[in-house]
Length: 87
Image (cartoon, rainbow, N blue to C red; front, side, top):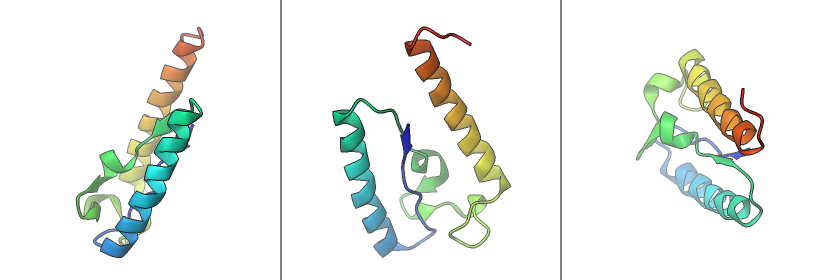
C-alpha cells in the first residue's frame, strides 16, 4: 500500500507540488496494481490540510491520526478479503 503525501494548511505552492507527487503515485500504483490510500480526501479541503487536523499547519494532531488509522485499517481489510483472508 502507498498513501498520498499530505498537504500543509493554506500553502498553495506546497499543495501544487504535493498534487504533482500524488498524481505520480496514483499512476504508479495503478500501473503496478498497488493499493493507494488518498488520506488527503479525509483530512484536507481545496485549501490544504484542515485546521482541525493540525497543530501548526503541517503536523497532524490526535484526531487526524485516528482518522488515518481508520483509513489504513479499512484498506488492509480490503486487501485481506481480496486475498481470501476474511477477518
